[in-house]
Amino acid sequence: MRGKVVINFVILLLMVLAIIPWADGFIFKRGYYRFIKALAADKAVNIKILEYQQGWFHSTAKIAMTSKTNPVNTPSVSVSIILEQNISHGPLVRDAASHRWIFALAAVQGKVHLPAALEAVLLGNLSNQNGVLDSHAIVTFGGDYLSQINTPVFNVHIPRIVDIVWQGLNGYMNFHMSGRHLQKMTTDITIGAIAAKSVMGSITTKEVAITYDISPNMSGLWNGTYYFKAPELTFAGVDGVFSVRNLNTSYTFGAASSDLYNAKIQFLLGQLVTPQFGVNASHINLSLENMRVSGLLNLVKTANSLKNRAMQLTSAQSQHLMALMPTLITPVTLVKGDTVIDTSYGKVWLNGQAAWPMTVKTIDDVFNGVTGKVDMRISAGLVDYLMTLMVAHEMNAMLPSQAVSPVDKMRAQWSRWVQQGFIIQDKTDYVTALTLERGIFKANGIQVY
Image (cartoon, rainbow, N blue to C red):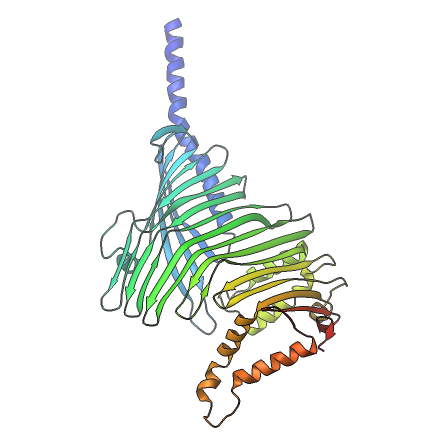
C-alpha cells in the first residue's frame, strides 16, 4: 500500500514536471503579445506578428517590422525586416551568453533578415543563416527581457562605385514589462568601425557607442538619458582631409514636477580639422526648463496623429504644430544656452536665456512677450575671418575698378557699431550684451529698434 502511494506520488510529480514547460510557454505567449503591442505604440514602425507556433517545450515566432517614410510628393517607401525567433520554455533554460542553465520564463534566440537582395549586398553575396543580426534573450519571471545582439561584418562591394567594410554592431537591449505596460528600456550598443572607399574619397570611423536609459513617468511622458560617443571620423577627398574627434552628445529629459517638464541637450567636440580651419575643444549646451506637461503631451499626440510620417512636414502641418507652441510655455519656463567654440581664428562665447513672465496664449504672445538676454564675446581675428567668408563670392565677382571691397565695407560698418557703443572692444575681443524685452531690442543698453 505504501509502495503504491510512493509510485502515485512520483507519477503525479512527473506529470506536473511535464506540464510545467507547456504552462510556462502559455504564460510567455500571453506576455509576448503584450510586449509586442507595447513596442508597436510608436507608430513610426509597424510591428506585426506573422505567426506564433506554440509547442510543449519550444515555440517559434515570426515578426515583420516595417519602417515607413513618405517624403512630401513622393510615393510611400517601406522596408520590411523579418525577425524569426526560437523560444525555449522555462522554468529551466540555457543562457547562451553565460552558457549556464538558469531559472527563467524563456530563452529566445532570434535572427533578423532583410529583403534578400539587400541582405546579399550587405553580406558581400555570402550566405549567412543568421541573417544580418543574431540575438539571444532571457525573459525572467519578473518581466525583464534581457537581449544580447550582434551582427556579422558587412562587406559592400559595388564595382567602380564603392567598397565598404563595416565591423557591424553588438551590445544589449533590455526591457522591463509590468502587466501590459513597458516600464523601462536600457540600451548599450557599439557600432563597429567603418572603412569606405569610392571615387569621391575615403571615410574611416572608429567604434561609436550609443546608450540610453528611459522609463515612463506618471504624466505619460518619459524620463531618461541618451548618450552618443564618436571618437573619430575622417574623410579624405580631392579637397583635402576632414576629421572629427571626440564628438559626444548627451540628452537628458524628465518631469520636474507633476505638471512641468525639463529637457537638456549637450554637444561636445574634441577637435575638428579641415583644410581651411580647425576647431579645438568646444561645447554647446541648450536646456528647456519648466515646460507645461499638458501642452507637451498634446504636441506629441498631435505629431503622432499626422498621417505623413516623413522627415519633411507639409507647410500646413508645420503651422499646425507651431500653433501649439504657446501651450508649452508657463510663467516659469526658461530657455538657456551656453556655447564656447574655439577655432583656429579665435573663440566665440555665448551665454543667454529667455523667459515669458506674462501669460502666453497665442503665437504672437510667444514672440512679443519674450524677455531674453545674450552675452557674447568673440575674438577679433574670428570676426575678420567670418567677414571674409561671408563676402567670398562677392570678392570673386568684384571688378578691378572697384576701390572698396565688400570686406572693407563690412569692416567699416563694424567699426561704426563699435563707435556707437553697440559693440565694445576689449583688447583682442569684441563684447556685447543683447537684450529683448517687450519687443524692444538693445545692444549694451542702447536701443537698436
